[in-house]
Length: 67
Image 1 (tube, rainbow, N blue to C red):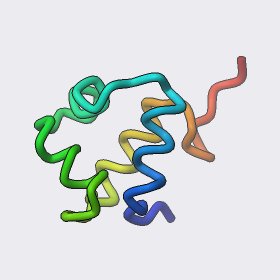
Image 2 (spheres, one colour):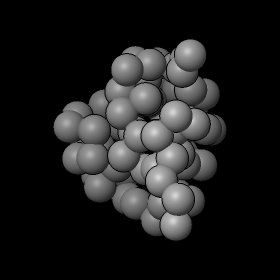
Image 3 (cartoon, rainbow, N blue to C red):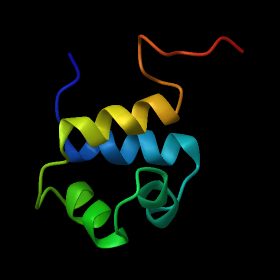
């Protein structure tokens, strides 16, 4: 089961993809401000949005694509 990530995990995944905060926010259909609050640790990222993020990034253990 995927759980809400830590702020550092959110930032690490985003930067490893080479995305700006704005690009990452658009990827999961949220505002830039929401993404900024998650990375700052001021709000918890909902686990469903985290799962969407890792699926779209190709990092979800059940939906990994072979390259």
